[in-house]
Image (cartoon, rainbow, N blue to C red):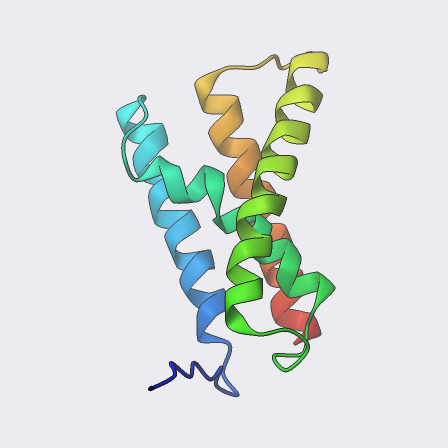
Length: 117
């Protein structure tokens, strides 16, 4: 029986990948003005993974599969809270404001996770 071993490098490639994806996908979503399949990871995975990077900065704290699972779970919570805050704010909840808030939150938490790691 063979096991899959995923090792994080000294250079946080995972955080750089989610930051790059967030910037590119967010820009394309705002430019097109409508959702697409590329929005799914931006909503259901990337914000939570950035939060996991802050909560567990050491790559040895939890295994990679737990990071992925926590990323999905925390993303659902984070995006829901962002939607509530947007709907209560004067800006309102629209497609563009939702994309911007998600991108700003993810890049901010991703940079914080990069700094702590």
